[in-house]
Image (cartoon, rainbow, N blue to C red; front, side):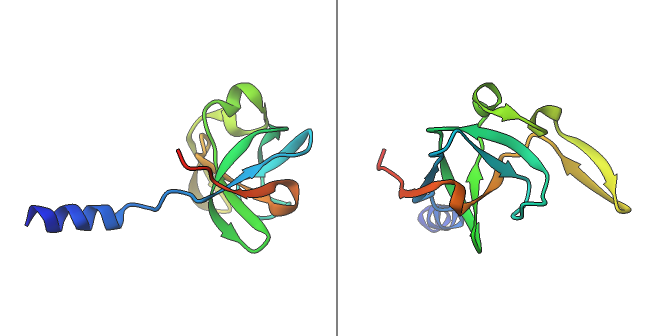
Length: 114
């Protein structure tokens, strides 16, 4: 029984990212959603490497880290988590743990083994 529960727990965990994105230019935009019209969260500096956790068309979803608050140009990311009403719907914004980058602004590469 314990082995079955352990196997079930392991299969329910998200797989580790196998790709990463490196910023080759002076800065690259990280948006709240896939689309250039989406809210800008942070400008990531050259050389930053971020794990890719998702894809949607030409957009890659990257994992953000608290360290970006010190190294990147924070646009909205610093505001802290809070609820707002947008278009009549209550939503939570701030302290995002991921964001979206257009794949033309990064170099995609396989993640190195730890």
